[in-house]
Length: 203
Image 1 (tube, helix red, strand yellow):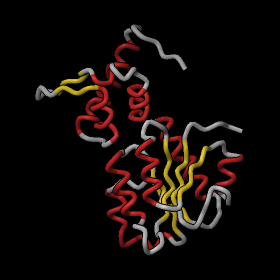
Image 2 (image 1 turned 90 degrees about the horizontal axis):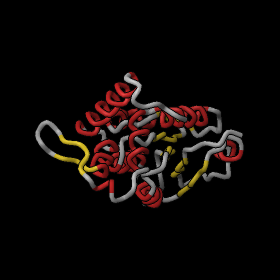
Image 3 (image 1 turned 180 degrees about the horizontal axis):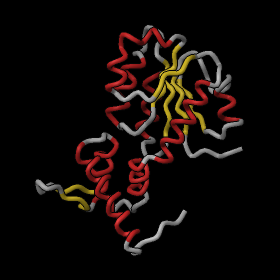
Image 4 (image 1 turned 60 degrees about the vertical axis):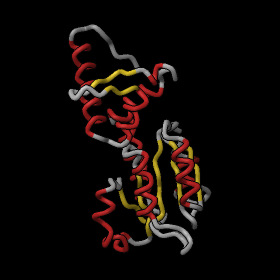
């Protein structure tokens, strides 16, 4: 069984990690799964684990005392734009009237609650994205530095503003202009060093 680096955060008030297809993802797919029936509890876990590779599976509709999936997606996007969020629904058509808002908040995918391989395929696609995304790699690189180094200025904009590694990490998570620009510059620098044989890549 292939061991995955991503943790699935399942937020659904009707489904747990012990039912298919989630049980198969855990037992056969190699994923770690944290499941929550309350949307705010799931969001709290996400906020406390932003340094991990997370894939969120979020229910579209909760009980009347809970907010809906769109609210949850927006709250996640306040913390990070790098987390793939898959909306779980019995019928994809129920969310069409909110489709633009889901797109604007960078929903990764829809999946139906029918126990099919659809949700497994979407999760595997999200896992592949996390493992190959340059922004995720940069964030991992930042988190690997000692805490004292994360507070030192390492990036200065053309306007003269300085950013520490911690601040850059926040900019990357929220995919701001500064975060995107830092990612591009670091990518170019890495390629330049490789071409000039000043650095090598190791797995």
